[in-house]
Image (cartoon, rainbow, N blue to C red; front, side, top):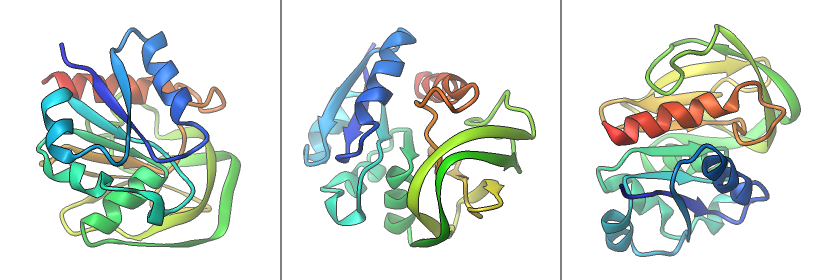
Length: 184
């Protein structure tokens, strides 16, 4: 079975994403965000766009959204997804650093099995301010109106929080759901 690719967008938690997946016995490989999209398409069954400091350091990662593969964007990865699909990103009114209570609005494939409210770990200054056309807003919090979004038909999913951090309650469930989506 092909691995999941974790795209390193120069964020502090990208190696933790990879380690979490390995600890879950999910085969994974970390790649640069400058790997040509045609090489990415041949080598994996799904892509996780990791976090990072800024959109201007996203390399060619926006091109990975057009490969027909499932994609999970985490933090900056969600921002990349929103911008590439016509949405908007802005500096958050309060930013998010620490524990955040998130309300699940829709329990779609990526959030299947979660209760209506979850406690997650946030580490961001920017946030999605306009959800792209064709996407559904899946979750919100008091500090961020778009905590999660998806374009289910394209199998594109984004979350603002960090499921790879132990402070996120049951963060592994998100990765289990994504692994299942990539295997369908």
